[in-house]
Image (cartoon, rainbow, N blue to C red):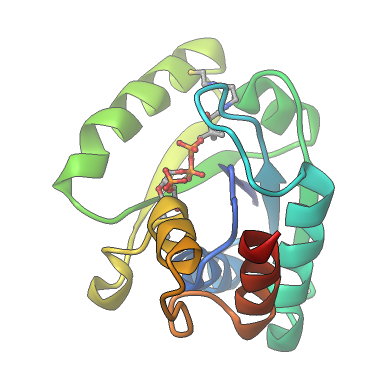
Length: 160
Ligand code: COA
């Protein structure tokens, strides 16, 4: 079974890494798919985000994980690459309504592709990419929320 984990990943956090590691144990292959959310202005380009994800997970020797940059509709792209399922992380009840709406629309667009949810570990449930960017922009310490390679890239980016 091939799972596709779509998101903006601007940047990847340890919460995302945890979902990738857990998903890699359950599926034959996991494609981490960088997509565009039209409502978001990103700090990093898709190519930078791809490199950052690859560097973040390189130490875990996840041979069945690949990072790709997609375009168009997520579920159509997932179908094109042979995925059986989309996976998403849920951190809190507040994520649920949005995720339910997305999953229902995606099911309507491609009824063969199911959306499966991974529940975030409590210690990661408050982490989001925007929160981390805000902390970094105000000179706060983001170690513990993002892999070390990302912390360095983030601090360089906010100084510019
Ligand atoms: N750990 C840490 N953070 C997590 C998380 C976890 N386990 N789970 C969710 N998040 C956070 C992310 O950090 C992100 O934070 P931010 O809003 O501060 O950036 C937020 O939750 C959700 O973002 P993300 O998972 O990146 O998804 P998204 O909502 O930005 O984008 C897409 C979702 C890209 C998959 C969606 O917009 C998409 O499919 N776009 C393509 C067009 C399309 O097909 N639209 C759907 C039509 S129905």
